[in-house]
Image 1: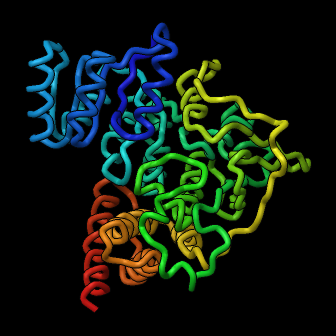
Image 2: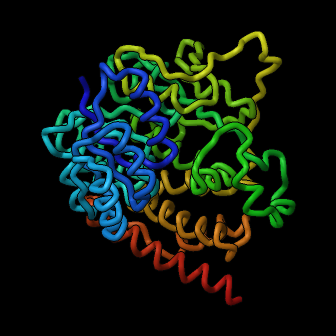
Length: 392
């Protein structure tokens, strides 16, 4: 029986994880459920799964949750604050941590889980983007197991030799696939007038707002390139991106003998979640089987870096190293918020990120403190750039 701490329990990944867990109640028990402030969603989770502890980072939301659970007669202990979250993932009552908080906010708890030697299922790509070298080093020191939940990285993991050498032996390149998002084929000029509603309407996947916008700009794929570099130990030059609108081939591994191994499946996040939860065994995900007879075609194309420069910026940040990826990520989070709030145009997201990268110098990412300092500086700078764009 695996004892699960689900961090980001009320989000899309969290809900899908709970769905998979519920299909194998003899394998998993929810010990800790954590989120930022959704007390209503957390109440439903506590009613269904009865975790020992529920954590909401926001203190007011935690107080509301405590009242709700008391009225329902539920015994789940309610805690609040980031420190409670960090302590919970390192606790001996937990052996598996699903890290699904969106953004750099998930970095401290992810690092705590890794440092404690847990089995960590990573859906929070920003933790690896911002502090990948530190996380990989901490995992090597603690004996933690890192399993990717992103569909692309999970696909690569499934296609690699299972001796877990870094870099993997016999591999020439990793190929990350991207659907192209809702604006595939559009020019940068045409993208200037797209709306938030259009950007949020992903053609294949049901995702939260931030990752949906990142998918539309291709920044999500850029972050995944950096993530793949850290997870699998290959340089940026050995990682390629292909636009694949069907989202059927989730990624590929190219070997030096000319072979390609690809993982195919329905566009359903329960598949990689089930793989990581059950690994090294296979368990039921609840996802529909891929209908091979209905596949009329599989298309692949080069990404358009002129129309979608965020991908190019991500490759440049990976090449620069140090705190550049953390700066990239932080500036992007602020810029995406600006777009969602109506303060920026879609194309201005990349402009803000580029401006912040140019203004802030890159330093060594030798500690979590250094990474968080770079993150704060980038956010402050990005907010100034966004404000200038609005006022201008």
